Image 1 (tube, rainbow, N blue to C red):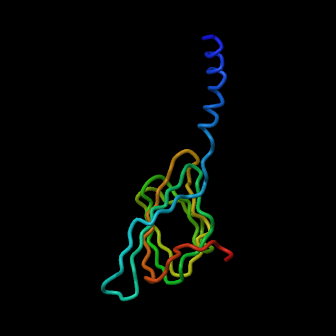
Image 2: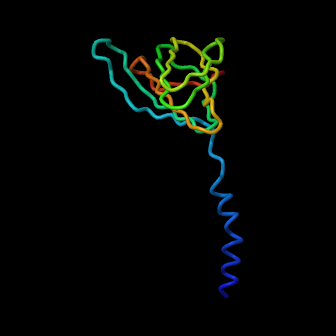
Image 3: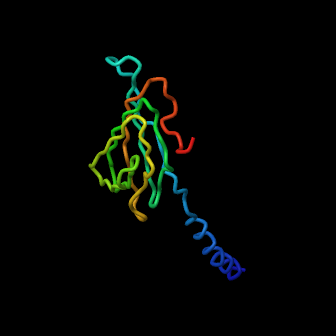
Length: 138
């Protein structure tokens, strides 16, 4: 009886480890981490999002509200980015870039297939804006 149970357990191990290695979604995780109305600029707010990319992760091409000025800084890893028709640029931890109102963000991706990456994006935007990204083509 013990031999049968051991054989069943050993046979089940490869299946269990295969299930544990199921690939995760490549979409970036975006979390609103801060928002506050600017007291000296009526109608404007500061909103910050943490964008977490798994290995090989990305955000689909998108635009931000036409009222949004964005300052982004890479917190961890390396991010590939393309704004409008500019060059695709890789930014590493500690480097920053900005986006002007109405810019198109065609490429936003982890530059690594093996390591995670994180980006903090700070928006100065109209306070009534609820959606901070809109997919390109909409």
